[in-house]
Length: 167
Image (tube, rainbow, N blue to C red):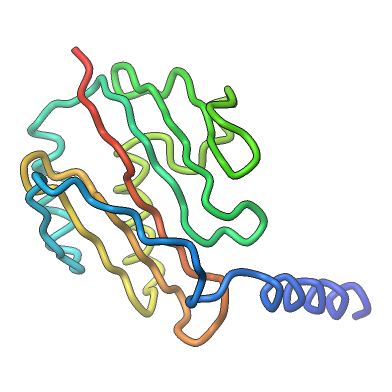
C-alpha cells in the first residue's frame, strides 16, 4: 500500500512540475514548400502508410523531436537510416549539440516507428489522435496524441524537423 501511494505521489509530483500547454517553447516551423494534409483517422493512417510504402524510401536522414517531455524538454534527434534501419544518431538540446547517442536511445528513430506510434494511438483508443502527413510520400510530419483528455503530461507530441532522402 505504501509503495503504491509513494509511486502515485511521485507521479503526481512529476506531472505538476512538468510541462504545461502554455509552454514558451515555440512551435516548429514547417518547410513552406511541403504539401501537408491533416488526417486524424485510421483510414488516413492506412492511406498514408501505403503511400510511404509505395514510395520505397529506405535510406534517409531524419530529424525528429518530442515536444514537452518533462525530463528533457525539446531534444532534437538526427538519425541516419539505411535500408530502413537506424545506423547512427545524434542529439541536440539546450545543453549539448550533435552529441552522438546510441540509436536505441532515440524514441522515434524511423518513419515506420512513427507509423507504429500513430497506430498505437488508435489501438489504445486515445481521446485524441492528430496527424499531419506530407502528401508527396505519405510520411508523418506532426503527431499529437492525447491519451486521456484532462490529464497533464501524458500527451505525446512528435515533430519531424527535417527529412532528406539519401541515395
